[in-house]
Image (cartoon, rainbow, N blue to C red; front, top):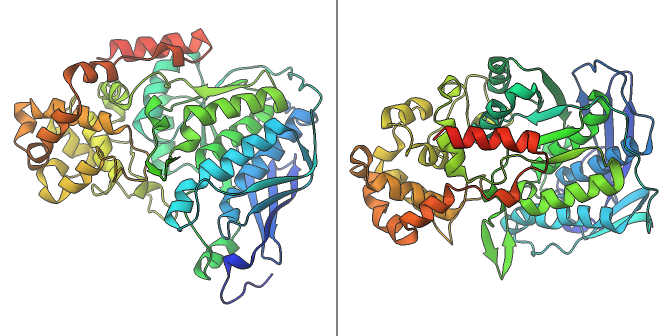
Length: 453
């Protein structure tokens, strides 16, 4: 379909989740969508790694997993117009299923809404083809079992992988950057690779006047991993998400807006309920780092020096079109935040070697570091709690090597006013009630983060 010279988002009344086809021979999932009146979209998700056993793709659980991935991935196209209705054609949804996707299209798109001048909460209706009051109870598949750990290239996933290496997990990545491939190679563990190809006309539509912005990408990756459990036989997906991901980025008229919604504990609970009620009760998916702060995880990562030259948490390197040799930009909120988290545990030379510049010696960086501690200006990025940033800055303010750097000197008083020594200690203490439900996983993680102090 030819796109108009100028796309009018306000002219669209509904977004439709239409067809999906999974080709078992090629392991390619094709997902189709359209706006009322056009345009149409088609994306593909290819499970590139060849399964070693027979996939379990002939049951209702697999079909429900495909359905929920289909709806969730639709956020990438829905946002081009953000109409009030999402129609799931030909499908019935239970209240639990409808609620899950309403949260994705509301909470998961609130940052997008704020940046485009739209209302929050999002006034969106998920309209199934018909309403299921309930589905037959999902049947647990007879799969071999095993552990999967998604790897994203940052410090958190490397801490989790190091903790769980003795359990021989398989790693998992969607569209992995060369740095992610190198990190996986360093671990010596098997990597399951999936390729997601967005509909090629989306970029053209964006140039024609479509709305654009952040989508709940971790939700999409999580559901790709759930679908993969039927192909590759694993039954446990352990994410590397810290507890601070649950903090809102900003409040808008009393409504929380969280850049990291699909990493939050609230989303994790919704996903757990969806899997148990609709897909397969044998599949467990959650974060094994949930009890820990970013500050505690950084303390552990500081000891994993074998990964320091390869890991990267700067999103510049993972953007579409980034060069394979691109590194840390040293100028974005993620660079500042990760550098700040590691600074209490590494010297300035080590931080400079990782990022490629001494951010703390640059007065122009002061406003950016201040924003990490701000109630008003916390950036829409995957950065931790405001008090974590203040805690790290407080620690640095007492260190001779750090306290006279322009950034620390400028922000020391503010940091000390925001957190006390006892609050710093609390941030470094795990919240055991958030531990992963399987002690075989929670135990090694706790030992790793307790020993690497």
